[in-house]
Image (cartoon, rainbow, N blue to C red; front, side, top):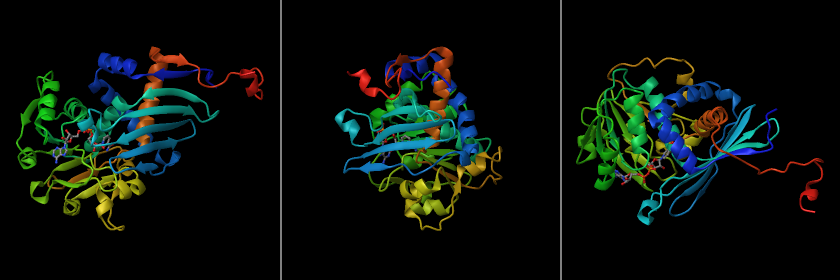
Length: 342
Ligand code: NAD
């Protein structure tokens, strides 16, 4: 049994300096095998759609999952209105706990970790679903998640050129500036979604709007494209003209959750989808024709948070990351809690 008298606290300051030191691209690359291994162990996890609390402006959520060793919890929100109040659309914080004793092992920031795990999940899915020689991507929605997606697809999947568009031109300029250190990545600023999608292999949509949006319409979809749809992740919040879902094969994380939150919330109950775990278990890309269209309808699933917490906890132990804090009682007599305050 590990020493559970203290737990690790990794706050934003320490996490951001660690990520800066190691490099986002290296963490995304390192995380993918963790994701694959946990997705292959699918049956060993207790899984459920996330409990949510909806309001007129956003959603507060808990993402919960466990297996025989660990249990993880992420608190996360989704408030597309927030940037207009100078706040982030998505923030997160996480807890990683021991199953044997029930004791917590780590508490950490998860806003940066969510962006990293979302990008790693997108790249992992594309590795199995997209055409093997994909070189060009459209990136629609240039807010907080966008750099992580761009860097993951460029450095890990080998994307060489990205067409970027956002209704907020300042967000696009920020993205282009942040990507300027990648000298071998060509970034093209586009004036609209249709222009951005023209002739690309992969389309990533990562917009935030609390409505049934139609960022992509049927006329923008070309043969052979892989759609990586990240921003539609709540009831009443989607990004695609639902007719697009009939144009290709649709892959999801946990089907039960995606039917509530994903693009497929528009579809009848018998609309066929494949859980991505079934692809990852085969350990090889799907058998696809170059003209086939594939759609990853991502809403984010708790196993992805589990994977990154598992990885960060290992790193924290190896590299002495985080402060040891006391959060649970340490008692000579484990029945004398009152003795602590007598
Ligand atoms: P953000 O607010 O920082 O950025 C969203 C961007 O989308 C903004 O710049 C906004 O101007 C742009 N946008 C809105 N409507 C648009 C339109 N019609 N066309 C083009 N651009 C448009 O948010 P973020 O943190 O980058 O998150 C983006 C989305 O991803 C959110 O909807 C969030 O809920 C979702 N998300 C999903 C996952 C997942 O696992 N699937 C994980 C994290 C975030």
